[in-house]
Each structure stands twice: as structure tokens, then as C-alpha cells.
Image (cartoon, rainbow, N blue to C red; front, side, top):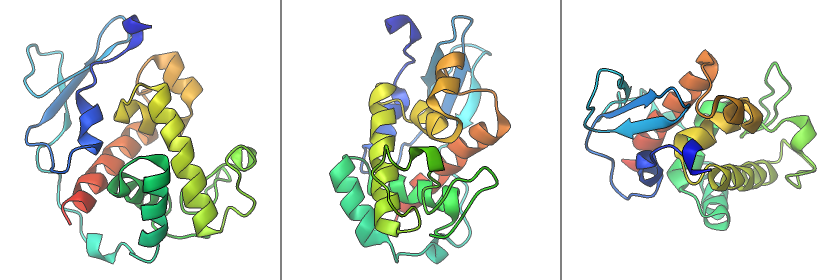
Length: 191
């Protein structure tokens, strides 16, 4: 199993109380192992995350209406408030009635086939949706040994695809999703 584990530099990003202070570089080696560093040692590394994420217009406009639920979910799931809020921002733009083209529903965009597993009776109920999505994300973090980018990729594309690629799959939507969530995560942490 160790062969498939990536360097877990980014795992601490969602646990720290202050933002990271260096650019993060990544490369996927021929064994499918992700490597992350703030000091690249070869040209294989590509910029993954900028030190100062671009400022997001209207982060203030992101509603605080659900902050009390997000706080409860963060405590229950043992994950960062800012991370859950960032995921909701990217998933649904805080629209509790959002439905994707693929049928994902609510604030954290839960797929219909996952409702029962996440104990969600009403996917449009903000509390049920945020709690269910947060507990599922906690499972993904555990599955990927705390590697935040892999857990985010699995939340977006599904864990089977992440397992198949043994890393973030080369799917533009998924790569963009991970980057957007991380950018909003930094923005919400700075508040």
C-alpha cells in the first residue's frame, strides 16, 4: 500500500490555522505516485497551488446563512469549517435547491444513489445535505490517508476513478474542482 501513497505535504493545509506560505508543486511519477513539494528538485514538477491564491471576488457575498450548520458538520465530521464552506461554494454556490445535469442535489451536490448511505431523506434540507456530505468527505479523507487533493478529487469524480489513476484523474472538471475548492478554502480561512 505504501507504494501507492503520495507525499502528504498538502494534508496539513486543511488543519493549519494559518495559510501556507509557499507555492506547491506536484508531479505524477511513472509508478502513479503523486509528489508534492514547495521546493521542486526537477523539471517534472508543475505548479499546483500558488502561495497567495488569487483573490476571489465577492467572497463576502458567499452566504453565512448556513454557517451554524457548517460549524456543526465540521465538529461532527472532524474537518475544517472553511473546507466544508469552500466545497459548498464550488458545488452549489450556496443554493440548497441546486440540481446538476447528472442529478446531484442540494448544497453539497449529493447523488441520488448515495442518499440512503448518507442518511439523507431530503437532499434539499440544508442540515441533512451538509451533514451527509461532510461525513462522506471524512470517509474519503480516511480512505486517502488524509491527502486532501485526492479526497477532493474522489468527491468530484468518484473514488473508483481516483483509485484507477492512483491520483487525481486527468479530467479537466476534476482538476479544476480541486483547484477551486483549495482557492476558496484559503479565502474562507483568511476571514
